[in-house]
Image (cartoon, rainbow, N blue to C red; front, side, top):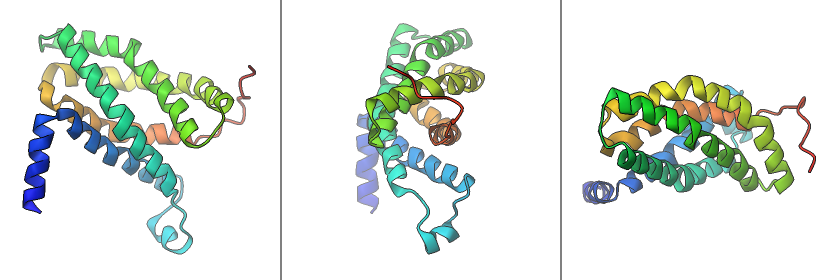
Length: 191
């Protein structure tokens, strides 16, 4: 077991995106389980009824590990190349640019791709994006500029994706909530 861990450590050091992919593959389904527990499911209930949606957890794991981690890694690398100096000023600039560019695209992809992974139609996926991205983005603008400024100004580049992945545990619980929130007052988009 020690040999396996040391090999993984070498791999994660040599390929930092792998570290992010592994952490997001674990954090995102964990967030889904926490959100399902908050919505009323419990381990005790699961033992008797099987109430946890493990397919939902798998979708979160696949999306977090194979989509979010690589795109976030790419964004961190790009922003570090554009603003190589680590300071409070550049941290604020990177956080602002992230809120305008990366965040809306990431939220749109989340709702759209997760809908497709649930086998929804394109029309349903587009409707979910239109209904859920704006309120989710409003919350994100209140949370992420602060965390991104800390990430870009205080955290060394090699630890930025793991730091954000830890912060995103709570955020992903919120995303899981928003994803499975049924907004009956919002009719689907007509195309």
